[in-house]
Length: 140
Length: 384
Ligand SMILES: [Zn+2]
Image 1 (cartoon, rainbow over the protein chains, first blue to last red):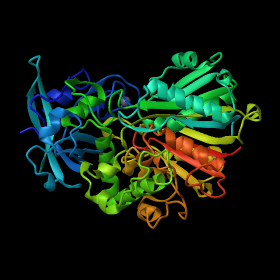
Image 2: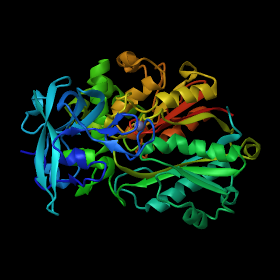
Image 3: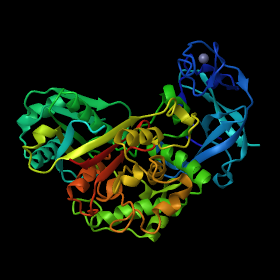
Image 4: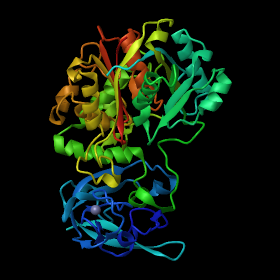
């Protein structure tokens, strides 16, 4: 179902990205001091400099903000998979926050700026037996 | 602001297609530096500093090989990409104006045949940091990054594919007059542009800079020292290198998206120079891809985003009759991709009156580096 090879790159979750890549929710990093939200997660709050965070789930709904279709495979392993689309989604709960993803199973010609989308999660098993849940997007 | 530093020499190696160089990258660097120093009418012993960006050729090695005297200053910019080209000139200007060095060579050497190709990516396995949010989705290249920005920008501002084409056609047309250009003798038609394959939509093949081997350099020194030099000095009127707060955070989660990262650079540059875009006769805009060039034209204040189609149409950016001829040596697309340093050299040549597409009565000549990668930079040259 993935648009890329089954054994393609996976994130290695860290303390600040674990919620995003394992919780199967839109777990947006939220500052424990000032409540500011930021994505991707960073080690300090961009607003107040605090280093402690919560990761509450926002709505999985978003709006397609931009996209590009890769026709040239920059790595040989991707050659059988081009063309594929990479999309940029604005979260409906926090439109200033944007998330990069794919739209598995969706024909490229159906992808349009402004289309309403919803997050789904792909389950990937890494070499070290850890599990990553990669957010992806579908029309809604 | 106009500091104490001026440009007194320019030089290049031969520019080759990727893998075409018979010399190593280090040898290319040394050739360009020697030619720039000779053009200045100076000797290697006069050089006491080097600045660059993302370069592999260490000043310690260069100075030993070239017979440079005592080394007094070396620096490179942070950050990736050709966004450092103009910034490297400002580093030299700052060092010379502050008295840390007297004569600095600013250079960039790049052999994509000898080293890795910018248009290709290794195979990532487990990704951390910002790459964890892009690589797993197959977003790996600069082309894709700039395409994502450009697609939204075209949508918001009605910029057309034909305006992207106009950047390419302008560069290729100007390259036909420049014997140093890799595309010299191989013009391109609008039909060939539109028929070329996609790389990353909305970029066709010709929207993307080529992969080349070569080196380019300029010599910067004090106004006092310039009196001994071979040619009239070119002044560094102002430079700018930077970004507004959070302007370039990862994965495009900043309020200003899409941007070429030149809004702040433009504001700073014009404020420091005490002039505006309307005072500039000729400009070089770094082309990694065509979309960021258009965005940078608007962000540097030459027009509103919604006016870009008209700004670039009808030969308005072409030599000799355009109101703002750009990329007059052919730019990265037509002359050669030396990580944008050719665009700095050409901006100096325009003030000297040495361009192969020479604009008349140049008082101010602009070079804008690395749109699409943060932070951007720009430098404004003028008569000495
Ligand atoms: Zn905070």
